[in-house]
Amino acid sequence: MWVKIIEYTKYERVRLISARALQLSMGAPPLIKTKSTDVITIAEEEFAKDAIPFTVMRD
Image 1: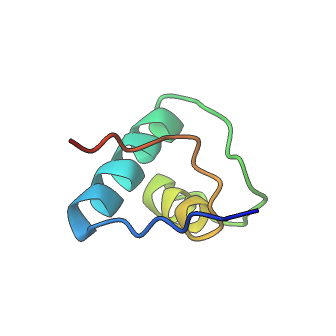
Image 2 (image 1 turned 30 degrees about the vertical axis):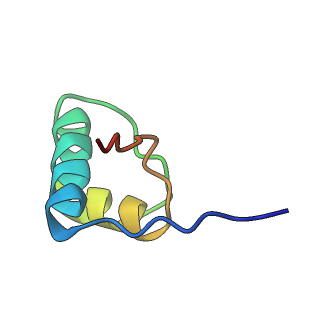
């Protein structure tokens, strides 16, 4: 079984984190346990733990 490792560009990373931070700021529940209350920090932690449920479509 092959596992495809996805490396995001810095622009994709920022877009994913900012989209998730927007969701969190509008009341979405965090996907990980964290002590932080800052939506950017929570989104960054979720990204680091590969918990953000978004996919990137490339041409």
